[in-house]
Length: 75
Image 1 (tube, one colour):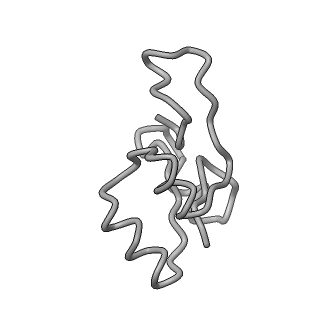
Image 2 (tube, rainbow, N blue to C red; image 1 turned 120 degrees about the horizontal axis):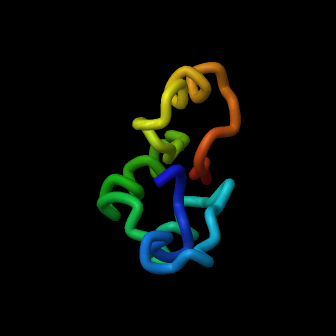
């Protein structure tokens, strides 16, 4: 996956990918990106979270350069 979706894009080809979300949206919508405790820790310590496809060639370099890749989760 190349970000966070509103439903599983494998089972739902019409799934919508989010460009940006808040931590509370991830928790309230139960998007199951990662463990809820980890999401809360990121939220409570104001640590931005970028969800992207590590297997895409060059994706990590693009993120490191500050490009808008995947989904950004912030407060």
